[in-house]
Length: 259
Image 1 (cartoon, rainbow, N blue to C red):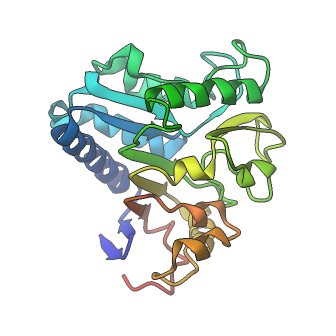
Image 2: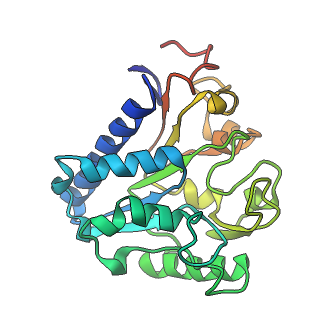
Image 3: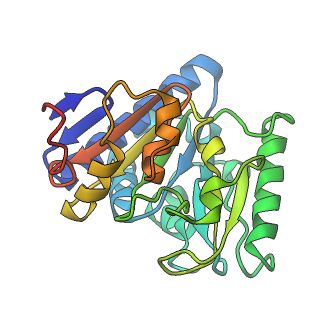
């Protein structure tokens, strides 16, 4: 494993996913030690599914009181409830349904068979976030997990899509996404950046170009310069820390960093 600032490179996808699972468990346990509960924003994708499987298999998963964890989602495909392509469905099958969670603390985004439009789903989810925060808009996320697409998108914020520039709202409806399905719901970039910690997870050579572009700036880049980055992933700047947890294949284009 090698490090350079907020970038941590692991040997391969299996090592990466197991390491992220251990970090996630520790992060939630530490949050509960400080304030008795914890919150995490989940993501979807193949590497996330591997992480969740390792959480479930971990011998130390019991250090977390899973009934006192709030589970949110960073984005969702606007599809009917139970659709296998929904991030909620994947997370439930991978580990949520197999852990002693409190159902009232699991907060999926509204599905397409419940509401008519992504905008309606976004408004409902924003109201739920606001209620959980006591009227502050967004609750305190101890950890926000993100994948990165080949085009540099995070959550469902794609390059040049109007949703990427959404301001003044916590959640946005997404249309014309360049990968199916075209309709989605996503946390906005300001909401993502309100998290105490954000971890961007990437695995495989197919993500190398996107990772390289997002991290092309100098390690000392300030948040203001991040805002000008074309890559959505390059704009992620959490309140506490932002970490890139990647494997060696995804790190192939990081020639400007020393490992």
